[in-house]
Amino acid sequence: MLRFFEFNTSMAWRKTIGAAGVAALTLMAVASAAEAEPIRGAGSTFAAPIINQWSRDYEAVRTDGGDFTSPDWRVDYEPVGSLAGVMRLDQSEMDFAATDAPLSSEDLAKRRLAQFPIVMGGIAVVANLDNVSSRQLRLSGPVLADIYLGKISRWTDPAIKSLNPDLTLPDAAIEVLHREDGSGSTFTFTSFLSKVSPEWKEKVGANTLVAWPQGRGERGTGGLASLTAKTGNSIAYLEYGQVVRLGLPFASLMNQAGAFIQPNGKSFQAGLTTVRWDPARGFNADTTNLAGPEAYPMATVTYAVFSLDRGEERISRVIDLFRLAFSQGADKATALGYIPVSRELANRIEAYWATSLRTAGN
Image (tube, rainbow, N blue to C red; front, side, top):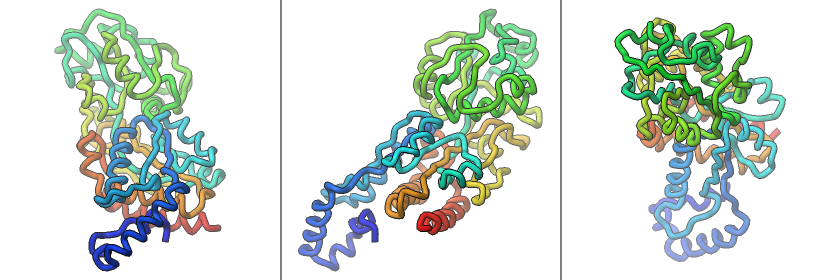
C-alpha cells in the first residue's frame, strides 16, 4: 500500500489499534517525512483557482483532523500557462501538467503521457466600455475576428452597430488586448475565431501562442484581467470565473443557431452535453463553436496530463488528488464559476486511470 494511503486512517480504525498503535504509526510517518515530497504540478492559469482550492482540501482530508501532516499530502502548483506546464513535464520532478489545450492521441502515445479532464468552464469576451453595462453588448464571431484582425478599429463601426441598434456606443478606438504567453484560453479563443472566420484561420490560426496581428499583450489570466479593468474601451478574452469574481463587463456572443447567448454555467453546459468523451484519444474534445440553440459557443476544458514513466507511486498520488476532487470538490468548483466533471464522466476517467496504471507498469 502506498504511503499516502497508509497514513489515511479512519477514526474507527484508530480506536481498533489503540493509542500505542497510533503512536507507532505516527513515529513511522515522521521518520519517512524527510523522504516525502509534495505533488508538483504546473500549467493552466484558467484552472489555478480551483486547483489551489482542491489542493488545500486534499491536505485537510488526508490529515484527517490530526496534528501530523506529510509533504506527500501537499500540492505545489505553479500557474505558468498551459504551454509552459506541458513543457515542464519533461522535468523529472514534475508530477502533472494542467492544460486547456488538449494533446492529441498521437502526441500522448509518442511521449508516453496520459490525459483526462478535471474541470470545465468557458471564455467570456470582456468589453470595458463607458455607459455600456455587462450583458448589453452583442458580438458575433466574424465581427470579433475582424476586431482582432484590425479590420474593425472603432466601436462605432457599422458592423458592431448593426448588432447593437439600441446601444449608444462610444466613438472611440478599440483597445485590443490579448495574452502574450502560451495559454489554453488563447487556444480556445483562436480556435473559435478559426471556425467562424476563414481569414483568421488562414492568417493567424489556432494555438496556445499565436502571432497577433495587433493589440497589447499581458501574461497570465490575472495580468490580462488587470490590464482590461484599467484600460477604457478595451476588449479581451478571459476565463468566465475570473470575469465574474472581478465584476468585469462581458458581451453576449452569437452561436451557431443565430442566438445571442450570455456566458454562464448553464450555457456552457448546454454545449458541453453534446461532446463525446473518448478515453482512447485521451478525452481530447473540441469545445469551440459548440452547437445547440442555448449553447454559448466558447467552452473550455482543463486536462491533467501525467507521464506514464513516473512510476506507479507518483502516478497514484496524482490520481488520489483528483479522485478526491471529483468526489468532494464539485461544489467548490461551481462556487468559483466552473463546471465540475459529471459523475458519469468521472466513472469513465477512473476506468482510464486503471488502464494507465497497467500501462505504466509495462
